[in-house]
Image (cartoon, rainbow, N blue to C red; front, side, top):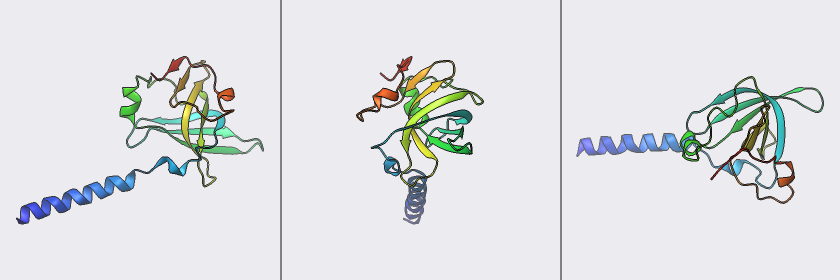
Length: 141
């Protein structure tokens, strides 16, 4: 009985830890999409989400560091999306949903590289947003 209680407690602790590490995409403003172009300084396939960092020169000339989040690596691979779509140091344009709190964070919807490759990660359903999404060269099935 003591072993069962210890195992159950350990399982609950582990589950609560992983739930804390993961969050809902409700932190992003899904009613608006923005586009940012800059140099990709990080592109990391790790759980719970793929992470990117984009260095952008803002309209005021100041440097902005955008933290960008994507789906988890398994979902990326299940959709046959290329992991080599972009490389660190490359200039890319990322379209996505901005954080509701006003910080320079975004959930990615599409990425276009300086080589002209576009990957659409999510369908763009908001009116008027399709105008800023370039034609895809790789599209989610």
